Length: 207
Image (cartoon, rainbow, N blue to C red; front, side):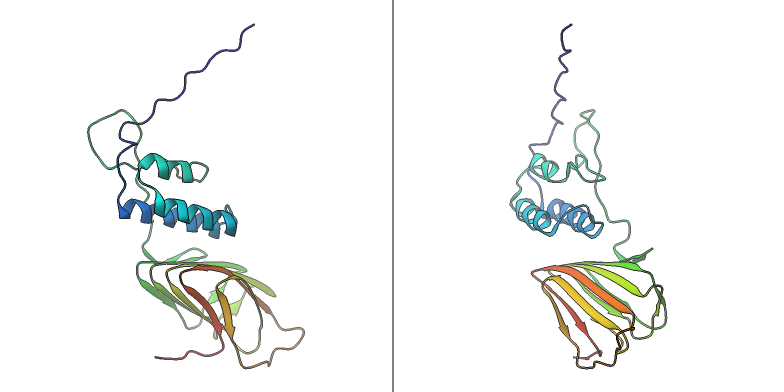
């Protein structure tokens, strides 16, 4: 019995077309979202960012996101080729989506009294974000806040009665109070800043 030889899938027409900066931006958003969801490690994200920025064709970009949800050819509309085509556009350029807060080439603020879920994710892409936790209601004794900042600045203001734990790349803390006891709730900030910054502080400093 011979093994059936399966034909290789045809290369989508236009995959060798040159990409634009907007095409690279859309792939970078997908990579950062995948990292925030835990699909990519920090090392994988860093490596793929460099490759996306160096990509010249749609085929180059497809190889970098083929194993991620929503992968597909993103060539612009052109002559009909019979190949599937899909553009990756953020569902919401700015604002809150469930347990997410995203700033896409913009700035967002989350302040006042609100309930913080056990796990919360902040993604800032070429923008800025303020996450004010001083009046929040915590849902758990341990709250994990994951942050991705690409060419962005993310400020997280924490109340004095929580224990702050930080980790990641480009994450810093400027906290001067230590009122939290050993049984205080814990806020863990884990992030990665690429050409940006993530800072946890105990008060909002206005410029």
